Length: 186
Image (cartoon, rainbow, N blue to C red; front, side, top):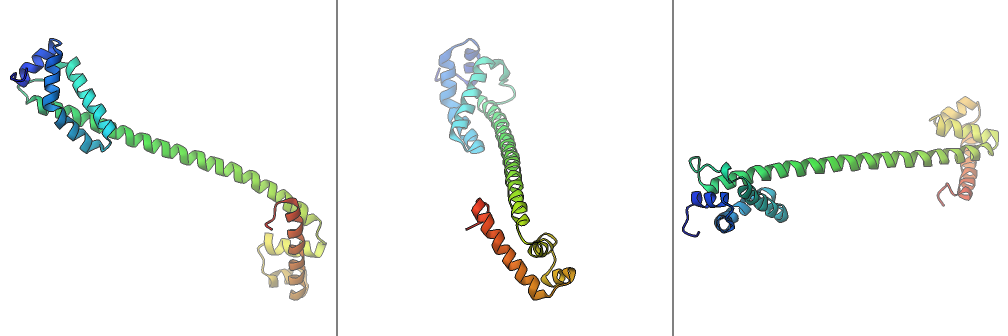
């Protein structure tokens, strides 16, 4: 078989002569592997492509037409096509996995944080209810209403110093209650 031409090897492969396939493999597997490895980078994927290309030759030797080119060019064209298919598939798979992971992470994040936020809001609401009316009103206007100390003082028609004192003392009480319930930072 070493002296046979590539065309003769393919004819012998068509007659299921394993030694003909072995000789074709000996002659061309290095080039097939090199091209696949260059395209795919991954050694294992490149080895799979080599196996597939020679398996295709074994199963469908009639696909090779010696009038259209050499066996090596035929095998390299098969290698290129299969390698590109794998690349596209791998890129598509990675993008799909990343998209799914992001969606899952975002969904988990939103649900988890929404539950925590609702629990914290309930604790803060309960803690606010135990504050004296003046402190509660000043904190609600400043922190939940987004007003400055000066604006809160004007809205409550009280001196600015009084409003600041009520907010400070109310926040201290809130912190104490929230720390006791495990919600606030220590």
